[in-house]
Image 1 (cartoon, rainbow, N blue to C red):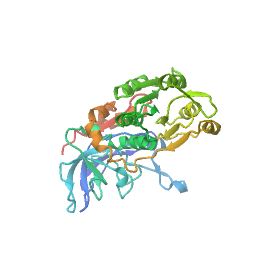
Image 2 (tube, helix red, strand yellow):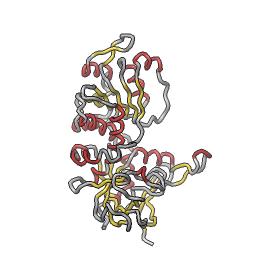
Image 3 (cartoon, rainbow, N blue to C red):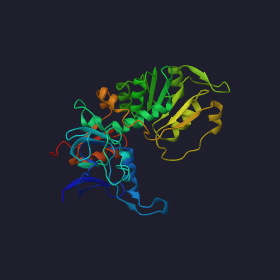
Image 4 (cartoon, helix red, strand yellow):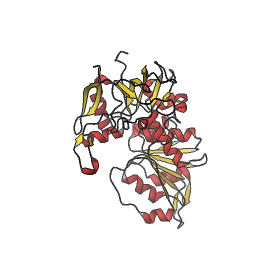
Length: 350
């Protein structure tokens, strides 16, 4: 039996690199050799939990989770009935298309492994092919950039809109890039870490705000002009707010700053519930829009990711070889230590 190495949760706050059986593709499947895989906040959530509940609704015990759902790699085996893919194709994956469960999120397979089985492989459904001009590490951003793209699609931002993005992590910065590629005239990014704000400017944001040092509403008024809420109280002229930070302070800031008819798009997971000033929302007729995953965007983003790969590549702060995957997770688990960590598998032979 051929084996491979795979990263699983190993208890609270720990990973474990285990030897598991290397998958064998069936007639409709392909086997992908992973060349790069991003670490996501969802992976960190599973680590904090120590796995995933076996039967969540019954309070079942935690079971290990194969981690990783942001892979890029190349096909090394092709099932007999697969006609549109061939050995050597460089591909990215739709983790939600796997019939054995979402890849890296409780399904049978995780993408932080040497190999990944793509079941019922079909271009445009489970995989998309990308050219040699794009590094594998940058291609691995396809999945998180689909999350960011869905958020921007949900915002329905138009060229004349003035937009602010809270949170300069990969999703927030990805949203800023998509907004600018969409032609939005003015995009502001807000964060508390100066290096992240520098990166926001590097990828095309028009302005940044350090919310630890500046009054956000006052600065937005300088940048976007003054408007008012339904009661005539002065408010920044910002049209769309995007929450890619997931902290209560952002929600409260938006409700307190929103002009009449503003929109808030929530893409970040709210880690803790918070009281919402419903009266404040009423006074602004603030529209709250939730954005979850990527219903149609997973491969919608791929051609533009290819075209603008150098710009998207700036989102990666660290590339770490799989032989040092523990260090990669340490970086991700340490607040402020890294922005986007990608694990590379270049040291493994074909």
